[in-house]
Image (cartoon, rainbow over all chains, first blue to last red; front, side):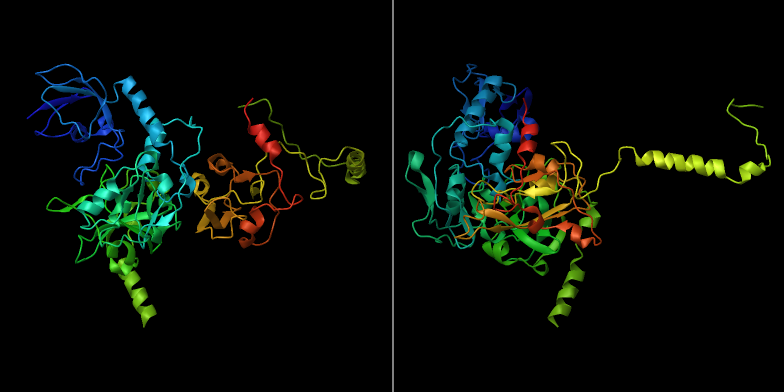
Length: 331
Length: 179
């Protein structure tokens, strides 16, 4: 078992673990941010370079430092490796540069973006970015398209992390969209509009770290911090049916998969990722379709937990009562 | 035991005939009244006359339009989340084709309401606004008899498009600007 030291924290990890995974095992501030790496998707990572770390000692056998910052999501640990993340000021400077590059074409239209409040790029630019841009040229402009029946694509916001492509490859078995062209004209697209219709294609919305792919059924309905996230489940034939309902009163505004502290889909059962099907995500917008478990535990530093100062027990929604009301209305 | 030297001994003295007439008291009281007639008035005749207020006075909000007359507000909800009194509510809507001259961005506030009874005029909404859409002005909120008439919708908040109905906030933004 190799031993790795990250920012002074030593941990023993299994063979083949990447530096990022080891840092996540330690947890806290040690963990580098990641925009394209997604532990539930194979071969993801290596594109965005936000997870770069400084390796000051390669291994016990070869103690030379690595010459450049390395992408921690793709570099496996070696025995005796010493890694610096927050403790290296020059690395943080390098990461600032990466963030600036990611924001070159990003419109920063957070006030109108549905992802705002749960956007990884927003967090990243807040922590590392400059408040002004040094870019003097015209940003890339694209038409907003409906990539699927219920999915909106804002290509201007995309950072080309390839996560949605991996979802189409690994979660849906057919892929009809991808990255077209190359270099600075590369874009996510389908050749035919509204072509993405696979049963699990909605998971692209969940994996998208920015607001490029958003839920059309939730479009401009509410800001996410005015909703109340509730854990809920239903008996679904196609997926695990374990979701988070974003509610306003007794109205379900949006359904998403459950995400862990890294913003990735939680495991449902037997170590399988809890991807949810499009039926659960887009069709089941009635409270009676779901068994509500209780309020979702949101990190209290998140804007989503703003203004939710009610006791947890008061947040519970009386589902039985709601059903009775609806039955009465039906009769 | 005497605790303070301010205590006075109460005497129940009978008033004299001259004192019972109350004439000196009435005359001295009237003299005070007449004296005040010639003094400078402490009040103004509002609303015909208003007092000068500071450039950063925080009164009735305005939702600004840009120089092309399009609404600045995109219903981002930051004012509502910043509001300590939870006075602001809004509903967003998507701009349709042909409405580009009305709203600056693809999302706009279809409903924007401020409960003026809840509002504490702290100005945090103005601080929070990323689009320079909401400003507090020197206008005072008029009184009314109904609670419901204090919920100000877009009809009372958005400024007009014509130059006469535009609301000048230049004083305010200049005062905000750091030297």
